[in-house]
Image (cartoon, rainbow, N blue to C red; front, side, top):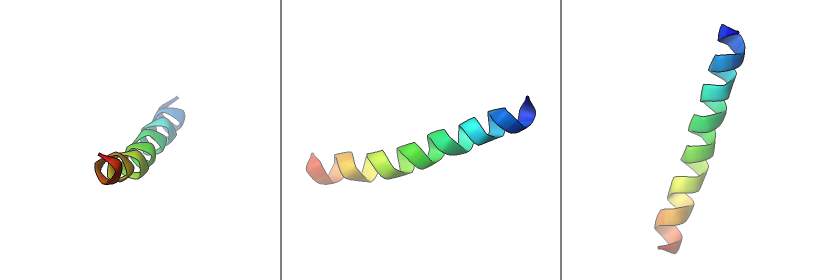
Length: 27
């Protein structure tokens, strides 16, 4: 359970890391 939770957290951080710069560039 803990491993899946950590993978989910990594996925969210990576997603935000990719989306936030894209939003700031297009804004």
